[in-house]
Image (cartoon, rainbow, N blue to C red):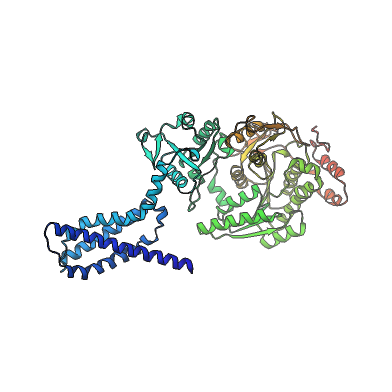
Length: 613
């Protein structure tokens, strides 16, 4: 109630002020008449002027002039004032022309309008003008010296944000490739060119932070630019690219991520085929609150399923993705029935209840333990979730007639040397065996590490850098395959659309990356120098860990699909090698070493001591 009263009082105050300014413009007009010795009937003025004021104030109110937030008045707001002033004075022109109102000639309105615009817009812009003058002439050593790349709308928005809110920063220069505007100023900040000389500008202006503000920049150009800037000891931020902007959400400056430094080819998907695969169906995502599972939910919702069931043992992750999806649906006007259920896939009764209630058409099975060292010390939990949980979920899919089941697997399932990899390979065998048992199309999708996923090295490195180091790397030569979470999930959906049953799809992860190089890039992105500001410490391989993951693409047992990034493993699978019933029966009373031996008897490349054959 107090807020409404305050807002009403503010509107009344501005109406009173505008009434005075309108009177002032007409007083100026009558003063001009007096100078050229033209008599103005005062009584006519006193009778007509209140009506003019009421007409103008009502017009201003209707077009929203009194809802302008003057602290942040912009061009659109000033244009609104100009437009309504011209319209109202045009109406008055014809009223004066064709009526008995004779105290002012209609042509007088031609110079009344500019006076009126200048006064009404001017009083609303005073605060902003003083702030601009203060920002323009204040000392440039008062905060972090910022270089903005891009003199377009994005650059203007970034500088405005700094001026309004971030008083610990000073925009020192704007770099743009347009030579025509080089030497000019953008909101008081000098514009220089070209962008290719950015390293020289960083040195010349003693810059400590660079903000890339070009939304329509090509991804390859962004990656190249970030890689170049990262040679300097500066923090790097950027506006999102056009492809990353959500409609209706104002883009904001964000940290440059390590994936922005990796030159990766654009992945092209058959969006129509994926849409046809998902639209109008009931979709279940197990592990839906995890890194991969939540991105699966995010991309699935855009394909307009009838129902989305998010199933996860971790309530916080499931809740977070539910809130994100609800906001997106409200923005887009989507009608998708979303259900979030808490539970574990190894709870046979619970997973059967979920399938009985919703009878999902499509199942994306992302629930799994994936942390290699932790699963070495907790092998029972790895078997319980990754093996038995997969078995119970596949059986429920068969029983309730699901159309397709897609297992999210791992590159560590290739000739595994650790418990996690062995359980994921076992899960693949379960899925291929289940494909022969009913009408459900079962398949698996195998890929490597995903950047910035929960439990990956990137969040660990980020925390270590924030704490001043050291950054811990197992070995200077260790390599891993990496893919972004959205890339991986898009290819999972594409694989699901391709699946006819029994396949193990393998994603092309590109070239392996040295973890040491990854650590150095992240240190530089934070504005530090490796080994000088932040140390890298080598701690040795952990139990069950490989120096290099297996090549996923290029071997003889791989054939390419219609998508150049997706392959199918063609090696024949001996599903008879698994004995899920024996493992299930023995699980409760079996010690961990015996359980490892049971895994090794089915997964021949795995040995319980962690050595590869």
